[in-house]
Length: 110
Ligand code: 2BA
View 1 (tube, rainbow, N blue to C red):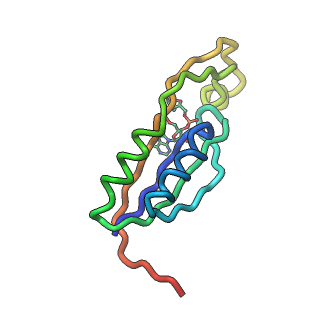
View 2 (cartoon, helix red, strand yellow):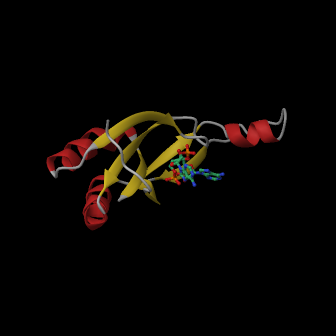
View 3 (cartoon, helix red, strand yellow):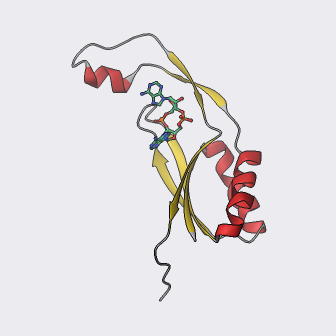
């Protein structure tokens, strides 16, 4: 069994959960915040059997779109530079999805 941790954009989250559930996956949805943009994103936890991993990955790839986001300033850099703040907006490409796949030692339901 694998644990998938998928960080996706809020705009894609609802449709992604619907599609995963309609294919029989069990999903836990967490409201999270990206460290760089300091904007909301969504993290999904999925416990999947090894033979279903690719199927889940295919759904994530199909649903999650890459988008351009503009950060008004660079908060991460600002705090690192103690007092210096870039006034220039920064445009970054976000997503489609960032997915971590971990091996599960035990899966217990009580
Ligand atoms: P954020 O940390 O808010 O990052 C949003 C986007 O900003 C990133 O998109 C990337 O294009 C850019 N970015 C992030 N850190 C940067 C940096 N130090 N310098 C320049 N640009 C930077 P994605 O790579 O698609 O990531 C989307 C979200 O996925 C991230 O939101 C974060 O919440 C998560 N994420 C991505 N990689 C991760 C990792 N290695 N570990 C943990 N979370 C990660």
